[in-house]
Length: 313
Image (cartoon, rainbow, N blue to C red; front, side, top):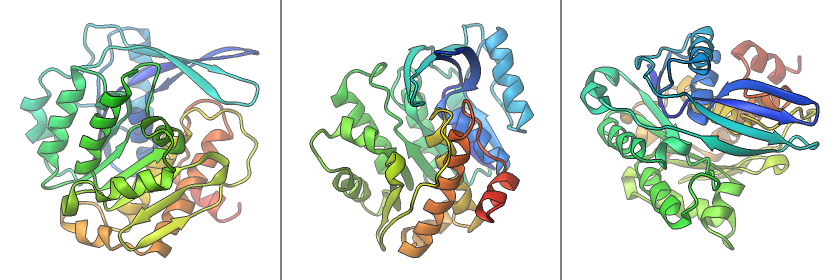
């Protein structure tokens, strides 16, 4: 079982042509992406007993994502994305983030989990961020940990806090993905590859086995202890960029799971991953992101769609 912990919300997307609402939230998108790639996955997050919460629950069910936390009495979280004519999105948020009772339920919910993913607002916004960090610490001895900071400067304005919090999670993670924009914001004036190399060294032998940087049209780049690799970005007509990084993350993790590298017992093999296999993972993940940007909203591909694209279909 794969587990994702993080925020669920509704993206209200505003374009010059009108307004649409899509279920989103970076961790939720990763959970849906993993499920569509045919992995059993549970999503631990929160949403309210309201129409937006009903839409979130229905969206998760439609992709066969398990939801062990019931809705609560607070309003569901909303992100408003203003999309410009080039397809780039700018966000504002109305959020509530906490998971009361998570600590008591973790031993049961994480029993048998081989991978735990988290990131984004869930790891930065209190009081939930502390609960997520405790969950990662609980899972770390037995479980592959993945992390994507997915920085939101409009929400977490304290850059020093965001940097410190990111580094706490990076030091506990096996797989880390960040965008070039994330790293440029966290470490201004530092080349993003140098920032990624530094992250690879955090936590020593218990730290990351892999750090990957997405760079938009320049394509993804990554590093492991065994070497570095990059991959091109497939050419597609961009509808918008909403959820592209989350689809990339889901497909990257899917490739790792497909190779039997999830679970703490496989940390040594994951750390020794050669550059040529890293490149294959990057190509696979970039293809998933390309499918997502070719259609509106955070709409990750199924395994069949991704296989068809990789086969040239």
